[in-house]
Amino acid sequence: MTTGIDQPLRIVQWTTGNVGRRSVRAIANHPDLELVGCFAWGQDKVGRDVGDLCDTGPIGVLATNDIDALLALRPDCVVYNPKWPNVDEIVRILSSGINVVTTAAFITGRGVGDDARGRIATACDAGSASILGTGMNPGFANLLGIVSAQICDRVDSITITESVDSTGYDSPETEIPIGFGRPVDDPALPSMTEAATAVFGDAVELVADALGVTLDEIRCDAEYAITTEDLDLGSWAIAANTVAGVHVVWKGIVDQRAVISLVARWRKGQHLQPDWRLEHGYLIEVQGQPCVRTKLEVFPPSDFIAKSFADYMVLGMIMTALPAINAIPHVCAAKPGIVTYNDVPLTAPSGWTRRGRTAP
Image 1 (tube, rainbow, N blue to C red):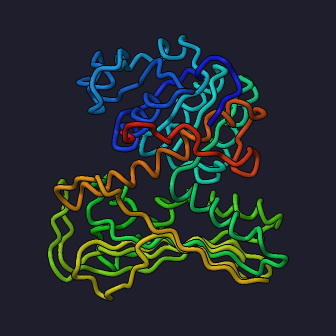
Image 2: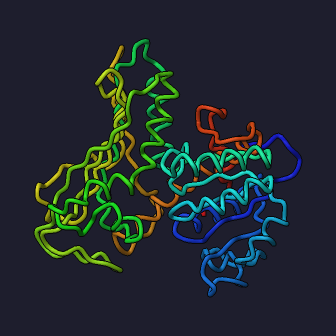
């Protein structure tokens, strides 16, 4: 992540939730980045050292909910990590001339609607600023699909599948809207799933742009599985005979054929019906010449200490945060506007190799 400038890039962190905490750790430990401010949602976090909020020890930056004060810092970039995007906030940041990298359900802006996407694009122009949305999936997984297809002289289709057991992911705010815990025959279920996963439609646009194809349609299809026993997930529960498995497919259609398929298969618990098989990772399948199959598996390092299955979810938070962190210098150097991986150089994992000590 070498910036090519003498001074570190000045960063404001937006929220200190699960992903935000990993962003703070990354910013604080990277030689090319300097944390200068942090926005906190909860009043109980205001005035506290951000390092204490993120379990790193004091770092000398206090959290605040004063947006004007944060914008007055004139940071180079805001790392925007809420669960969902707040368009008014994003517009305010960008129109102030501050770049944004975000993991908050944003890739191209399609999922927030045409009006909101237009407001964001206008704010970019007004502030001569850029915004890039990423994360693990959508985000890095789509980039991996694009890279996998670079060895083909014919691409008939790309399928990118996330297939995971998310039992330890305690986030009812993001999962209940998808349909978890609903009756499987609820007529509102398909529309709920489509609305809550709309950012995958953004990702279909991203891959289509990389392929240079104009899509006739972007479509969402979904299937569901139930748990046959009550499921305790910590802060919430799923009752027996309700949805505990979601299989959603966002498709980019050309000539009535799915050229792009972005698949997410999420299951919870060990009593699913039907008992879906998982790949436990990310699978890229390119049909063409040649055909390509790429699998990404993720597991903890040898010194990782976990007291419960939920502890492993920290890896997911790192995987979500780091694609945005690594993109910061390229976004700061990009032309104003909504930019994607197709508009910036390949982001490099520079700055994370440690000498004489382990990574945080």
